[in-house]
Amino acid sequence: MKTFLKGISTILFLSLFTLVVSGQEYDCKVKNEQFRNNKNAQVVKHEGKPFSQSDIASFKGLFYYDIDCNWVMKGTLSALPAPKLVEVETTKGTKVQLYDYGTLSLIIDGEQYDLQVYQDVALSEFSNAPGTIFVPIKDETSGPKPKTTYENGRYLVIEPPATGNQVVVDFNMAINPYENYNNSYPSLLVPDENVILAPITTGERKYEDR
Image 1 (tube, rainbow, N blue to C red):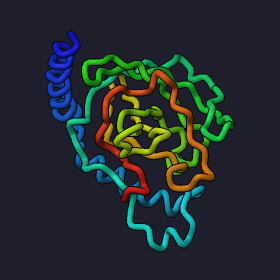
Image 2 (image 1 turned 90 degrees about the vertical axis):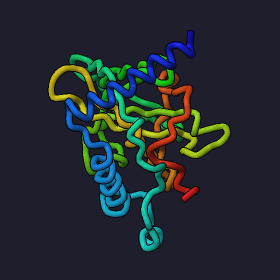
Image 3 (image 1 turned 90 degrees about the horizontal axis):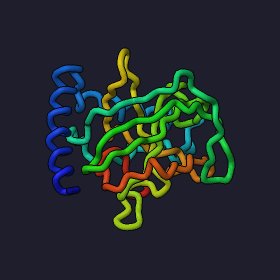
């Protein structure tokens, strides 16, 4: 049954990707090149940057998988009527305030996921874009082997739709928390429901492997 579902999900994946490109004119390559350039600039220039001046002097950019537009798909964003302020635990045993934005539903490798979505309040990772909507995720690339992405997970940026509840989900935009570059920063503990039982081989990789 799972093999059958996997085949169906692959067909849906490809058809949805075509729909996204033609219907919403989502240019995966251009979007991600801009996104990565902006992130490279943010981590060395914006307030709360994680690198020291000596690190910045030798900085050559963050470390990514190649852009893979097969990791662009459609999801359903079920937003709460009014985002609720909540406290979320971090890897340092502290808590940060975020807005509980709702859930993101999608199918990956034949499995249905309903992922917790947050809206930024004051995370350093989004200092250049306050109020960003994002999903903390972990997947099989973050461990135990092979570990090609940050072990404490990544943050997947989501752009809410102007109308309706269908969103473009681009896993190329999965980014590392600042903790991966500087251990003095905390990262969010990824909720159990946001652990994806598949290797997401796109987006940002472990910085130390660059």
